[in-house]
Length: 480
Figure (tube, rainbow, N blue to C red):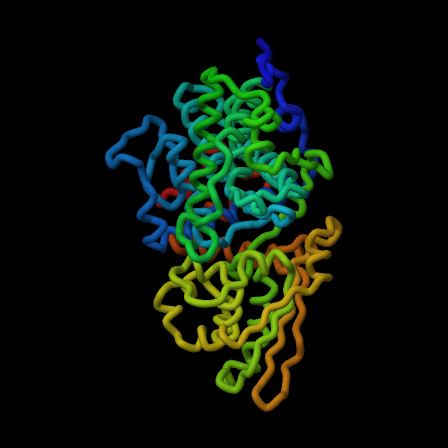
């Protein structure tokens, strides 16, 4: 009797092998990548510290079961918690992501590579404390920076030509995959164990994007990445314990990821894994705004002096943007919560036109109660500029362009302002990094004494000093 499905266990999918080989064998020799990874680290930790000021975030943090004691537990920066590595990854990842102020990667799929730092920091701190307790050499921060570069690369290269959002899947799948790979490597996993962990991540797949889009936009979008990076750590731990993997998790006929969830299309890879993503990552420096709106908000802030005292005289606000912005953040009608507002292009532009700024509190109910915001939203006209959409996907540009113009009732118009590259873009690194460091210092001041702030700054801004620090010693600096 024959069967249509072969019973012989296949060799692992090449995608799984390539990820494992990259994590195990690739030597990062780019000083630019390491330097950028350091800025990603401090910026992400700063975002986490700011998020602790928001009860909607802080209420989710801590042990899953109150009173749980974990020997050599992972420290959660900015708190007194000591947690197991999986729960710590959720805590750190959730705090980093909560305010939508951490770095970004935009391609066919978008996402936030720093989401992986939840799992990387939790795993590295756990291993480092355990080693130190046993009298062994702790992990050094060089290892964290290397793991960060590799996690960014895995997530970002998978995102270049493969759009998960177009089949309704959330990008946090790529966080789970990258975290599983690099954390299995940090734990000392073999090639087979790393392959197994990554295969498990693909079998898990991704949550639906339901919580990111109207009419269901909600706060899960702020902890989905924490959930994904924690799951990656969990799957890595299982694989290191000897749990089997699923070699054709992607390509298996009928039951594999491609056939079930990706319209029978195999992943495409336009370039090999190296350090491209880290070198080109986008920082959110100026505004805690969904990245496709960053340049629009920059235009709005610049137009504020012209319009702030003439809001009632505005007839139209014209916005030219790119296709991805239209698909994600072009929203009309009621906005029900902060998660809804920080993914609404019109809300962000309106707030910036009125106030000349945009900050995390701008999305809270008290700020949104200002009737001028919705009045301006109703006057906005958003359209796609095809050139913006083409340049957005051009690997030599990766622009995120928006153009903004205000039309008044008397027929007069403001200058149309166009910003193609946000402050956090690689093309504006020299201009942006000092602003990023200022952002980090402000966030440190939220939680720590001046003396403690100075210790953190001195160890964070000196590459050699940071790299040689034990992971647990560096993380201990963030305990209030």
